[in-house]
Image 1 (tube, helix red, strand yellow):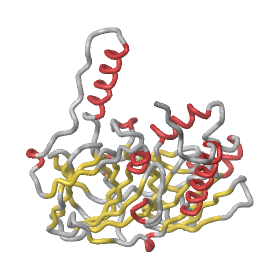
Image 2 (cartoon, rainbow, N blue to C red; image 1 turned 30 degrees about the vertical axis):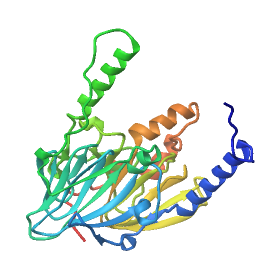
Image 3 (cartoon, helix red, strand yellow; image 1 turned 30 degrees about the horizontal axis):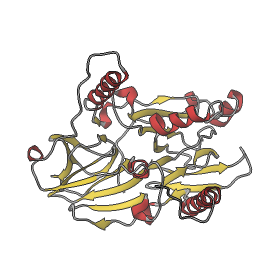
Length: 355
């Protein structure tokens, strides 16, 4: 039996139009700074409030990550749910706990958590004030591949719910199928034994040549096993700026403390600047030259940076090689922009405050 396509237009024209429409829609939804006051908090069935910085549920669709704010009031325990994507949480205010597959982790402002894919999790607040945290997840990337699944467990006991999806152990043999079984089993075993929590009190900030001091919050370098999202925190000295650079992919910077502005342009000079303040998110996703500058002459600015380095950006580097996908000015220009980090009188590291 023979079949024929029903479209009367060659695939060349269909694909060309589809690509043009996609990029037009993408550009229409791009943001540079999402202000705190633009994030509307909504009551949800989970007994928590939820607001979207960046993501399709808030009218700001993305392709690799989303950014969401959550609030839970005193005396409240949320429902339990799980999803097929990873999420990273940065705790902003209050003291509360999060259960991950039955393991309860208490946290406070400045702590970070990893919510692994397919892990049941819920949140509880036994403190005296509202607790607030942000999550950054890979849901948009999995949705693009048709693999984004969300399962709500209500108020069920985690012990009565289905565990994470099973996987077959490695098999003996030198054939390609046995090799795949062993490789994927090893990967899953590692991912299911990764670190889940970074306490604020355990962090150490170290100076860098880019004019900042920084530390990892969630990254494979400190024992996490995620699907590619990494989080780091950096501080910019009073009246100082981070050196200029550029890269592709969505990179977001959540302003924990301080105020300043960012330069973003197709060239290292002559482009626009964008102001930001505490609680805002700076969006960098255009392969633009960018530099973040602290406008406060007396206090440091503190920022949490999130991107999909260990998956999306590494894949882009491999696919686009030999194109350079991370670029800085020559060292002498970088050092002039950043200044000598040793001349900054870095203050003692204190937990974030809210608001």
